[in-house]
Image 1: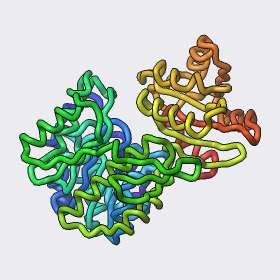
Image 2 (image 1 turned 45 degrees about the horizontal axis):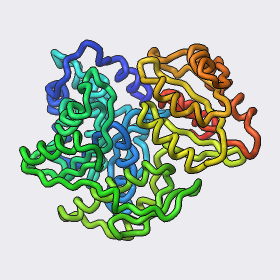
Image 3 (image 1 turned 180 degrees about the vertical axis):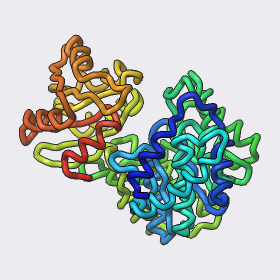
Length: 422
């Protein structure tokens, strides 16, 4: 079985109509030898910033000489991106071979495993096969009932910034969502929390008391920005550093603080991670499509932000980078997202907008989004394809302009591909 054949079969197992829970994942993993019980983890959940935080932690651990697995979702262009070891995606041969084993094991289940549950098992087997010292594991959705939560107590359970998303599944307040995400905290682990509203912090603090787990919170007041521009950012944290990250935007400095606190926790648990590895790992972090500068003259920035919190962070970052400039936007959204709030962040910054329809059955059409934007005074132009949108946005930009593609991860992967980046 090839990797693509495996991916096609995995995608057939939809989540729709299935009861949430861990029983299917546990049964599936037992059928393939319980690989999840033989690995060490950093487990990461949150609404925003969990992927960036995971990428920074994984880069530091690899720089420290540890064979480091990284499991993230969704992917931007190829399924293989979801499972990486020291920055290298799983090979097509390994994906096909391991997925064939997992799919065969799942066939005997009375309640068949879902798509993400199959993916979880593939990742666990791969990381064990690669003899990973530690795996940085990103939650798919929520925490308590997410299939990744079958793992034993991780070395660190990390909770990043929490906002209102997936409210039908997780609850309609930050406190309810925080309770679901705090479900990854288990006796025997250490917990790290991105400093945020007291509503969220109180929930996580209570969970840690119940589980007798030590909690470390980031200290935003201890983060001092030294420089910020298109080449990245320099800062100190808790008097340590200076550190450099290539990731753009103020929010990434705060994500870096969560990554640093996690490294400090791991050191306290006996992991050997030198300060040189921290400095080098942060500076080498690669996390595509998150305020990613991919071209100059004109500047082209790609960002996969897909909710109001992400768009607010994007807006702040663009104002910091281009304080006197209106930008050309290429954008598309899913109709079930809070697109009025998302687009409301872009409108004050926009010179003009080119709209496309993301490749999803939940997508808002390019024409409908363009009309909505025009009704609010914007210059908006619907495009028939992502290729047309990229071409028109770039053609409209002079050397001194800046183009930002944003709004949906479903479109950003295709934009990166069309620009020759993947």
